[in-house]
Length: 196
Image 1 (tube, rainbow, N blue to C red):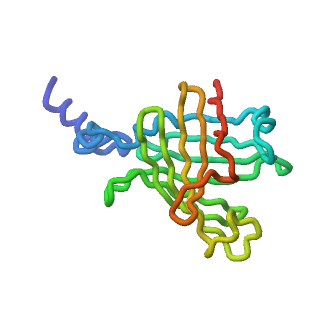
Image 2: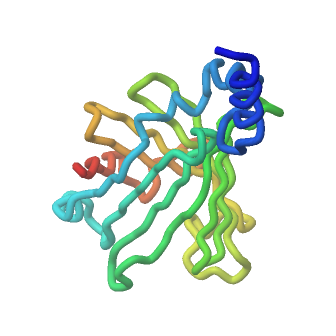
Image 3: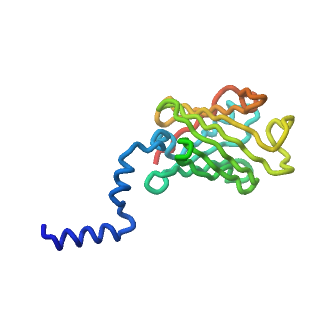
Protein backbone atom coordinates (compact mmCIF):
# COMPACT_ATOMS: atom_id res chain seq x y z
CA UNK A 1 0.00 0.00 0.00
CA UNK A 2 1.38 3.41 -0.87
CA UNK A 3 2.22 6.07 1.70
CA UNK A 4 -0.55 8.39 0.46
CA UNK A 5 -3.20 5.71 1.02
CA UNK A 6 -1.86 4.95 4.52
CA UNK A 7 -1.89 8.64 5.46
CA UNK A 8 -5.45 8.99 4.15
CA UNK A 9 -6.64 6.00 6.22
CA UNK A 10 -4.84 7.33 9.29
CA UNK A 11 -6.35 10.81 8.85
CA UNK A 12 -9.87 9.42 8.39
CA UNK A 13 -9.42 7.18 11.42
CA UNK A 14 -8.24 10.01 13.67
CA UNK A 15 -10.95 12.39 12.47
CA UNK A 16 -13.77 9.89 12.86
CA UNK A 17 -15.25 10.41 16.37
CA UNK A 18 -16.86 6.95 16.41
CA UNK A 19 -13.59 5.12 15.79
CA UNK A 20 -11.68 4.54 19.02
CA UNK A 21 -8.20 5.96 19.34
CA UNK A 22 -5.36 3.44 19.76
CA UNK A 23 -4.96 4.18 23.46
CA UNK A 24 -8.69 3.57 23.97
CA UNK A 25 -8.40 0.21 22.23
CA UNK A 26 -5.62 -0.75 24.61
CA UNK A 27 -7.67 0.36 27.61
CA UNK A 28 -10.72 -1.59 26.42
CA UNK A 29 -8.57 -4.69 26.03
CA UNK A 30 -8.28 -4.72 29.81
CA UNK A 31 -11.07 -6.45 31.70
CA UNK A 32 -14.27 -4.42 31.99
CA UNK A 33 -15.60 -4.80 35.57
CA UNK A 34 -19.16 -4.29 34.30
CA UNK A 35 -18.91 -7.60 32.42
CA UNK A 36 -19.26 -9.34 35.79
CA UNK A 37 -22.91 -8.16 35.77
CA UNK A 38 -23.71 -9.41 32.27
CA UNK A 39 -26.23 -11.94 33.67
CA UNK A 40 -28.51 -8.94 34.37
CA UNK A 41 -28.69 -7.79 30.76
CA UNK A 42 -32.17 -8.17 29.30
CA UNK A 43 -35.80 -7.66 30.21
CA UNK A 44 -37.11 -9.50 33.25
CA UNK A 45 -40.72 -10.06 34.31
CA UNK A 46 -42.21 -11.57 37.41
CA UNK A 47 -45.01 -13.80 36.12
CA UNK A 48 -48.58 -12.98 37.12
CA UNK A 49 -48.78 -16.23 39.12
CA UNK A 50 -46.02 -14.84 41.38
CA UNK A 51 -48.71 -12.69 43.02
CA UNK A 52 -50.44 -15.87 44.22
CA UNK A 53 -47.31 -17.08 46.04
CA UNK A 54 -46.66 -13.76 47.82
CA UNK A 55 -49.42 -12.87 50.30
CA UNK A 56 -49.83 -9.13 50.50
CA UNK A 57 -47.97 -8.47 47.22
CA UNK A 58 -50.35 -6.52 45.03
CA UNK A 59 -48.02 -5.51 42.21
CA UNK A 60 -45.90 -7.21 39.57
CA UNK A 61 -42.31 -6.03 39.05
CA UNK A 62 -40.48 -5.76 35.76
CA UNK A 63 -36.80 -4.95 35.25
CA UNK A 64 -34.72 -4.01 32.26
CA UNK A 65 -30.93 -3.79 32.10
CA UNK A 66 -29.18 -2.73 28.91
CA UNK A 67 -25.65 -1.86 27.93
CA UNK A 68 -24.84 1.79 27.44
CA UNK A 69 -22.39 3.08 24.84
CA UNK A 70 -19.35 0.84 24.46
CA UNK A 71 -20.37 -1.06 27.62
CA UNK A 72 -19.15 1.68 29.95
CA UNK A 73 -22.42 1.66 31.90
CA UNK A 74 -25.60 -0.34 32.33
CA UNK A 75 -28.96 1.41 32.14
CA UNK A 76 -31.63 0.25 34.60
CA UNK A 77 -35.38 0.59 34.35
CA UNK A 78 -37.61 -1.02 36.98
CA UNK A 79 -41.39 -0.70 37.15
CA UNK A 80 -44.35 -1.91 39.14
CA UNK A 81 -47.60 -2.75 37.41
CA UNK A 82 -50.80 -2.23 39.36
CA UNK A 83 -53.71 0.23 39.10
CA UNK A 84 -51.38 2.75 37.44
CA UNK A 85 -50.35 0.72 34.34
CA UNK A 86 -46.65 1.62 34.28
CA UNK A 87 -45.56 3.37 37.43
CA UNK A 88 -41.80 3.80 37.36
CA UNK A 89 -39.97 2.64 40.43
CA UNK A 90 -36.44 3.32 39.28
CA UNK A 91 -34.44 4.65 36.37
CA UNK A 92 -30.69 4.65 36.80
CA UNK A 93 -27.19 3.57 35.87
CA UNK A 94 -24.50 1.17 36.98
CA UNK A 95 -20.93 2.28 36.28
CA UNK A 96 -17.35 1.50 37.30
CA UNK A 97 -16.05 4.07 39.78
CA UNK A 98 -12.23 4.09 39.58
CA UNK A 99 -11.93 6.17 42.76
CA UNK A 100 -12.83 3.27 45.01
CA UNK A 101 -12.88 0.51 42.39
CA UNK A 102 -16.57 -0.35 42.82
CA UNK A 103 -19.52 -0.93 40.57
CA UNK A 104 -21.57 2.11 41.60
CA UNK A 105 -25.27 2.50 41.15
CA UNK A 106 -27.44 5.60 41.16
CA UNK A 107 -31.13 5.79 40.42
CA UNK A 108 -34.13 8.04 40.77
CA UNK A 109 -37.87 7.56 41.12
CA UNK A 110 -39.21 10.81 39.64
CA UNK A 111 -42.92 10.40 40.50
CA UNK A 112 -42.19 9.81 44.19
CA UNK A 113 -38.82 11.61 44.38
CA UNK A 114 -36.73 8.75 45.81
CA UNK A 115 -32.97 8.80 45.28
CA UNK A 116 -31.12 5.44 45.18
CA UNK A 117 -27.35 5.23 45.78
CA UNK A 118 -25.26 2.12 46.23
CA UNK A 119 -23.12 -0.50 44.59
CA UNK A 120 -23.16 -3.95 43.00
CA UNK A 121 -20.94 -6.93 43.76
CA UNK A 122 -20.69 -10.04 41.59
CA UNK A 123 -20.02 -12.65 44.25
CA UNK A 124 -20.06 -15.49 41.70
CA UNK A 125 -21.17 -15.70 38.06
CA UNK A 126 -24.64 -16.78 39.28
CA UNK A 127 -24.94 -14.46 42.34
CA UNK A 128 -25.02 -10.65 42.21
CA UNK A 129 -25.63 -8.43 45.24
CA UNK A 130 -26.88 -4.85 45.15
CA UNK A 131 -26.59 -2.82 48.39
CA UNK A 132 -28.10 0.65 48.35
CA UNK A 133 -29.63 3.49 50.31
CA UNK A 134 -33.03 4.89 49.41
CA UNK A 135 -33.44 8.56 50.36
CA UNK A 136 -37.14 9.30 50.83
CA UNK A 137 -38.60 12.81 50.59
CA UNK A 138 -39.81 14.67 53.66
CA UNK A 139 -43.41 13.76 54.43
CA UNK A 140 -43.49 10.55 52.38
CA UNK A 141 -46.32 8.52 53.98
CA UNK A 142 -45.16 4.95 53.23
CA UNK A 143 -41.52 4.85 54.30
CA UNK A 144 -40.46 1.27 55.15
CA UNK A 145 -39.89 0.54 58.83
CA UNK A 146 -41.32 3.89 59.96
CA UNK A 147 -40.08 3.25 63.51
CA UNK A 148 -36.51 3.92 62.33
CA UNK A 149 -35.17 7.48 62.53
CA UNK A 150 -34.46 9.58 59.45
CA UNK A 151 -35.52 9.39 55.83
CA UNK A 152 -32.91 6.93 54.51
CA UNK A 153 -33.24 3.15 54.45
CA UNK A 154 -30.57 0.63 53.43
CA UNK A 155 -31.49 -2.42 51.36
CA UNK A 156 -29.67 -5.46 50.05
CA UNK A 157 -30.86 -7.41 47.05
CA UNK A 158 -29.37 -10.83 46.38
CA UNK A 159 -29.94 -11.89 42.78
CA UNK A 160 -29.42 -15.58 42.05
CA UNK A 161 -29.50 -17.07 38.56
CA UNK A 162 -30.30 -20.80 38.79
CA UNK A 163 -30.33 -20.76 34.98
CA UNK A 164 -29.67 -18.00 32.40
CA UNK A 165 -33.38 -17.16 32.04
CA UNK A 166 -34.43 -17.17 35.73
CA UNK A 167 -33.58 -14.63 38.41
CA UNK A 168 -34.41 -15.10 42.09
CA UNK A 169 -34.47 -11.80 43.99
CA UNK A 170 -34.24 -11.68 47.78
CA UNK A 171 -34.65 -8.24 49.39
CA UNK A 172 -33.44 -7.42 52.89
CA UNK A 173 -33.61 -4.19 54.89
CA UNK A 174 -30.95 -3.16 57.40
CA UNK A 175 -32.26 -2.53 60.91
CA UNK A 176 -29.83 -1.95 63.79
CA UNK A 177 -26.90 -3.05 61.59
CA UNK A 178 -28.57 -6.42 60.91
CA UNK A 179 -30.20 -7.59 57.68
CA UNK A 180 -33.88 -8.62 57.91
CA UNK A 181 -36.11 -9.95 55.12
CA UNK A 182 -38.01 -7.00 53.69
CA UNK A 183 -41.69 -7.37 54.47
CA UNK A 184 -40.90 -10.33 56.75
CA UNK A 185 -40.65 -12.65 53.72
CA UNK A 186 -37.73 -14.99 53.18
CA UNK A 187 -38.79 -16.47 49.83
CA UNK A 188 -37.48 -14.83 46.65
CA UNK A 189 -39.29 -12.91 43.95
CA UNK A 190 -38.98 -14.90 40.72
CA UNK A 191 -38.29 -13.13 37.41
CA UNK A 192 -38.03 -14.67 33.95
CA UNK A 193 -36.04 -13.25 31.07
CA UNK A 194 -38.18 -12.17 28.12
CA UNK A 195 -37.58 -14.25 25.03
CA UNK A 196 -37.23 -11.76 22.17
